[in-house]
Amino acid sequence: MPNEHKIIGLVYAAKNDTAKADDLIRAYISFIRREASKCMKRACTDSDDEYSIALMAFYEAIMGYGKDRGAFLGYASMLIHSRLTDYARKEMRHQGNVSLYEEKGDGDGTTLADTLADGTDVLEERALRDATRQEIEELANVMKGFGISFSDVSDNCPKQERTLRTCTEVIRYAGANPHILDLMLQTKKLPLAELVKGSGAERKTLERHRKYLLAMQCF
Amino acid sequence: MKYVVMECCVGYAVVLDENGTFLKVANKNYEIGQTVTDVVPIAVESRKKARILPVKWVYSVTAAACLLPVLIPLLSRYNSAVASVYLTINPEIE
Image 1 (spheres, rainbow over the protein chains, first blue to last red):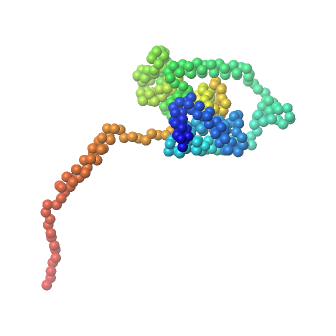
Image 2: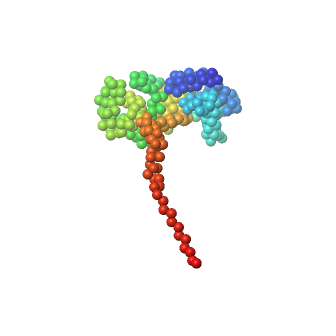
Image 3: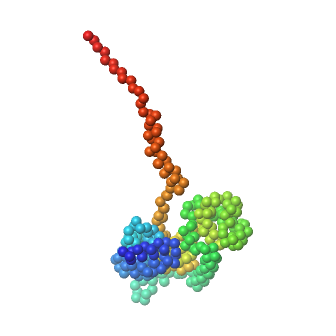
């Protein structure tokens, strides 16, 4: 029982802290892999998609757990099984299709994909990805100055189409008025009054999606 | 739909889609800056907080509840009978 209290304490700490959530997931990697293997009825490796789904399900269990749900590991196990079952059902639709990465069977290890003409330049693609990664890392640093991360932004992102459109209008208005960005960089806060006055959006909407708007301004 | 991977954590990755929406998805060994097409979005149940009555209403409701046992007998006095009329109709034929 003391062990259960300890786990619950760690779970509640991880709900609001991404680093603690990552630590908790790493601490229970072997449990997660074991549960995934039970569901898959074979050994689960790091390269399996099911392993990623199981990790995600454990994270979902951390965020969705409450003491009324019983023991945390039991709840996490149920969620892992549920997500993997859903994933397997979705993948059943692709059964019967041949994978491009399946070996041709002529003994030299070549796959079907190797026989297809590839119009993309691998080096150029790699260079583009590296440039994109660099820009994203710079953006993450700027956002850190405002005390937000991409995880915060995804939690704060508008889900409804109408709200997304309103936020897009606000971002467009801010883009057309550079002094708003200057004000934001100076004060490290979103100038809500100015944005409400200029875009006509409701203050409540802007307050609810403040982190999302800040991130999009930083773009 | 194409997605750009923005952040990678142990349990999930954050991607940005073409509509400007950020999503948490399963991290299938993604790298930051990678463009992906087939994602598995996370489904976190939002545990809604139980609605707690605002404090000002608690005082009003408590006061009303305390007054009721006093008010009911007082009001019922006005409804109590002060007199009664007894009427019988009993015709006889002899």
